[in-house]
Length: 39
Image 1: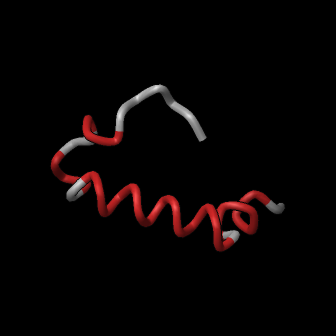
Image 2: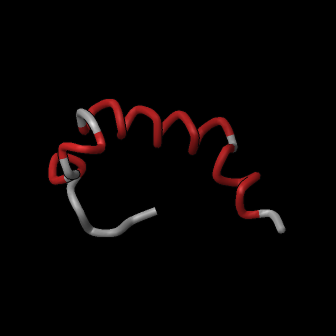
């Protein structure tokens, strides 16, 4: 996924950018996004 926004520019309500990025990376590598796209 690419929105053109920097991770460090996320709103504070999302939590630390590094945590959000780590979760995104984990979900991408473990297939979470793949399974959510299947209809």
